[in-house]
Image 1: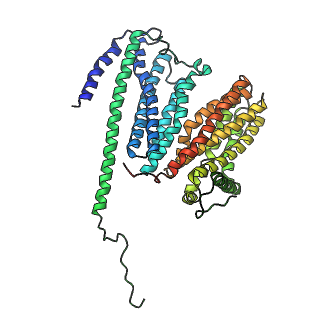
Image 2: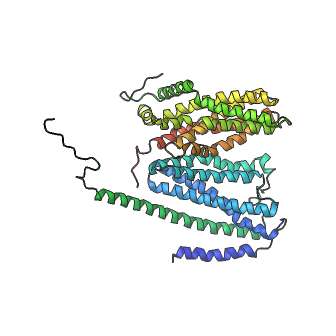
Image 3: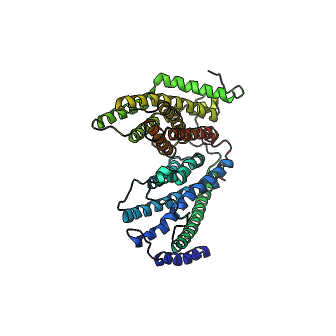
Amino acid sequence: MNFRLFALGLLAIPVALATFLVPDARGFKEPALARMIFWHVPCALLSSLFVLVAAYYAVRYLNSPKMKWDIRVGAALELGALSAGLAMATGILFSRVQWGAWWHNDPRQTSFLIVLLTMLAGLALRGALSDEIKRASSTAVYCVASVIPLIFFTFVFPRLPQIAGNSLHPSQTIAQGQLDTNYRVVLYATFFLLFLCFVALFRRRVKVGEMELTLENLNELDTDRRRDPTDPGVVRPVSLPKGH
Amino acid sequence: MASISPETSPAPWLSQVRAVFAKEWITEMRSRHGIFVSGLFGVTAVIALVFASYTFKPSPLLAAGILSVILTFSSLLGVPRLFISEEEQRTFDLLMVLVDPGPAYFGKTLVTIVTTALTGFLLSLLYVVMVGIPVESWPLFWGSILVLSLALGASVSFAGALVLGAANRWVLAAAVAMPFLFPLVAMGVGALGAAFGDGRESDGWRNCLAILGMGVCLLALGPALVPTVWRPGSNHPRKK
C-alpha cells in the first residue's frame, strides 16, 4: 500500500473523531448538526483554491503550450467542481436544518452557485471540443479570464455592505476570532485533512491524464508503423486505354 | 475600407480592425439579422412585462433588475452570431488568411458593441415609456445603458470567440458567457436602480465605473488571449 495514502488514512481517524467529540455549538436550532461547518467551510475554500490552481496552470499552458499543463488545468477544474458541489450539498443541508428551508434567497448561496456553474461551464467547454489542442487553449483562456468574476463572487460580492447585512452567512466570524477555540482547532484540522485528500486526488488525476496521453501517443505510433508506405490507400490504380 | 491582401506585407493593426469592422457592419446592415433577433426578443419581453404588470407598478429596484435581465438576454441571443456564423459559413479560415486573429476579434467585437448599444438604447426607451417607470436621473440612466452595452458586447464576444469549433456552440456560448454576465447584471441593477430613484446617484455612478472597468478588462484581454484559441497549432509542439 502507498505509505502516503496510509498516513492520510491514519490522520483521518482522529480528525473525524474530533468533529464528533467537540461540544455542541450554542445559538443554533439544531446544535449537534452545526458540526456540518467542519466540512462545508473547507470545501468552499478548497474550491476557490482550485480555481486559482486552474488559472495558474492555464497561464503556464499559454506561456509554453504543453499538454502536461492542460492535464493539470482539467484536473483542477474537475476537483474544484467536486469540492464546490460538496460545499453546496452540505450548505443546502445546513440551510434546511438550521434555517428551515432547503434554499434561501441568500446572496452568498447564490454567488457560490454561480461559482459552481462557472466551473461546470469550463468542463462543458472542455467536453464540447474534440480537437485536443483547441480544447487545451480554449480552456486555458477561459480559466484565465474567469478568475476575475470568480474572485468577485467569492470574495467581493458577499462582503459588500448592502449584501453582508442581508446575508444569513456570518462574514467575518473566523477572521475576527469569534469562533470557539475547540471549533477553530477542529475546523483547521478538517481543512488540513481535506487539503491533503484533494492534493492526493489531484496527483492521481494528473497521473491518469498523463497515462491516457502516453497510451494515445503509443496508439498513434502503432498505427503509423502498421501503415505500408507503398499502400496507395483508398485511391484505386486506374489504367487508361492505349491511345489516350 | 482599407485594402488588405495576403500577398502584401501585413497591414497595420488598426487598418485590419477597420477592415473587419467595415465588413461586419456592411454584412449586418444587409441582413440585420442580429439586430432583429435581439430587438424582437427585447420587445417581446417588454410587452410581456406590460401585460403582467397591469395591476401593479414595479419598484425601482425590481424595474432595474428586469431591464438588466432583458438587456443581457437580448445581447446573448443575437451577438455570438458574428463569430459562430463565420465558422458555419466556412469563411473563418479565409478571414484568418486575410487578417490577424487579434484585429479580427477586435473588429467583430466593436460591431457587437455598436449593435448591442443600438438595441439597448431602443429597448430601454421602450421599457421606460411602456412600463411607465419614472427616471430620476437621465444622465445616469443613459450612462448605465452605454457602459452596460459595452461590457455586455465585450463579454458575449469573448464567449462567442471561445466556443468556435465546439459542438452545440450556441448553447455553450451562453454557458461560457455566464460568469462574465452575472457580475454585470448585479452591478447593472445597482446603477439602473439609482437612476430610477433607489439609492444615491453617486452609488449608481460607482456601479457604472465598475461595469466600465470590467468591460475594458475584457476588451483588452480578448485580442491578447483569443489568438491562442484561433490559431492554436501555430507554435504548438503536439503532445509533450
